[in-house]
Image: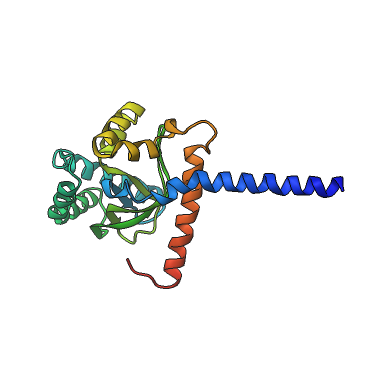
Length: 222
């Protein structure tokens, strides 16, 4: 009798734990699209994983960011997208010029399109995995490791030029996100008793990756 009672208590506790976990991540998964529409990611994919191709990827990244820094001086997401689209051919030419300067003859493709990203941590800020609009630059075969950041607001520029700091990152994000959206991705805003925000986003990342793989298997096109 005592053994059965312990089993019942054990099942109840397990159920409460599972419920708590899913309740804690539900707010993130349910609202995961709200702030994505206010962000543009930057994605540079190397030709291969060889050291020289990886080094070239970073040079292309730096050159494009340097050229786009002053042009993306806007707080309006739609204006930022318009600027990128208007300059997409020039972005390709800039990347191609940098590739040739370094003695390579790789092709390059630039586009503003939907792309899948893993979780990205900026100090206490955590951006969950999922599909974001991104400026993607693919060098050559595009079979190497990639580099990514947030192009709008300009966290890439902060990252590359002076290193990320919590205050700089938060200041940029507050400019374009609502208070609710900002609090959602701010790890410091996690309330006591809840799952850590980074753990929540890791679970969301697993869910998003599973969904992405299923779409590929069934030949889904966005």
